[in-house]
Amino acid sequence: MRSAREAIDELRASAQRCVGVKRVPLVKAGGRVLAKPIVSELDVPPADNSAMDGYALRFDEWPGKTAPMPVSQRITAGSAPAPLEPGTAARIFTGAEIPDGADTVVIQEHTQASEEAVLLTRLPDRCANIRPQGQDIARGREVVHPGCRLRPQELGLLASIGIERVPVFERLRVAIVSTGDELREPGEQLAPGQIYNSNRYLLRGLLESWGFKVVDLGIAKDTPDAIAAVFEAAAERAHVVLSTGGVSVGEEDHVRAVIERLGALALWKIAMKPGKPLAFGRIGETPFIGLPGNPSSALVTALVVARPFLFDCQGRSDVSWRPLEIPAAFSKRGGPREEFLRVRRADGRLERYPNQSSGVLLSASWGDGLAVQAPGRDIEAGDVVPFLAYADLL
Image (tube, rainbow, N blue to C red; front, side):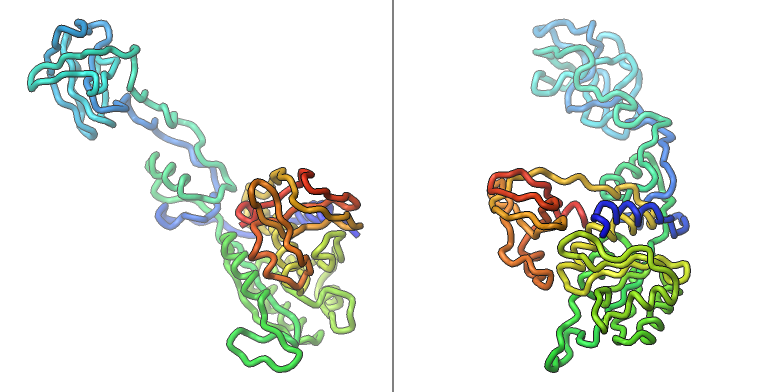
């Protein structure tokens, strides 16, 4: 069996960006993935401006803290100042443009002012309280890189350089299919042997949080022909097909045979826990990932293995994650497979949920991330272990 890292690398090596490019209004670009570099065509700020309310003057003309200076003009933000008259100060407000001839701003707390003159009781350093032209962004600088998912801070940044429409990748369409005759939808009556289909809602939530468009094909009956029909429909409607269940080795696990019939199977089983039964291949030319049916296994394999591949297909650049290193508050013997333990942070240490069964989804809701235990490595309380926060994976 391949390790989780080997599986991730194999999937990513085969990934190709599947989506086209379109231009959307900046107001609708939140969460979209930038397709082309954005280079500023202007300086921000466009001119030297005041960082404080106060008085602008030429540093070398300060008459001392006992002699008042005439006030020659009043400059508010958004107005165009006249050149500073020699020997005078200008009343100025935060964000207002510095007049030609001034090189320093004295904050108003260090002044005593009347209508026509101001006593500057303390002179700061030359150029104090001035934000120079281009301090934030210089003309010609690339401010947002392709592959960036646009967050509120990028939207504000693009607005600050006057960008009205943004080139973004179209949303990746991911089809989801649940397999299993035992599955029923919430709201339906359960008969003996039946369970509710949690994976459908788990995957929808994940994929939508990643900015993808979900094509929901519902539940496929547990027969090879029924699964094949749904998979073919999914492959026609989506860039990637994602299924849950049917990827183990039981007599009623038909996914492997169906994928080999419809396309090709490149990967089967991973040396990770939970999540050993995972399939990767294609339906025709459409990539396919078969996740385990147990809900915690589906969640962990989606976060750890499917996510990097899907991000590559979408054109995102923030594919890799860097684990935090946090002390464990538990002890656990290592096993033959790499384990992803549902944990939560408490008082600077990681607590482990007592039941790590692949069918226990409450463990994921209780926790806030995954602790990674290397194969064969025992963990003792106080040992530092890698931690993947859910917040960094969503």
